[in-house]
Image (tube, rainbow, N blue to C red; front, side):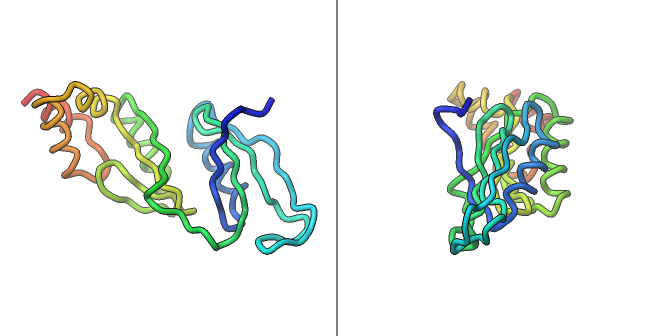
Length: 158
């Protein structure tokens, strides 16, 4: 059954490869149907993969092989909530270690250009509290690339 809302992510011919990587990396993720182009078009030849259906952590997505016209930007990212440093490390290292790049404040980019936020729940919970706790947690986050649970906990404690 097709989801009512689906995130469409644009790729330059690599949607199936990306979908398979996400399915191997994140829990509750899988690759569904792979659709091939019924005719030549500006981004694909007849028979090329045009759409890869997949889920990331239970969220329905499609990868559209639309060509190089629209590159990814940080204006769109997928946020993954983590409960432990080991989980944060595992996802961060999988993305960065597979040709991705590190950025600031828990952001990284996979080799296909999709932006990810690998975010400990302890940080989002602290920010939701507001006040001095949020300020200290936010300040700690601003000094990091991959987020450090212990450093965030220490900042929350004051």
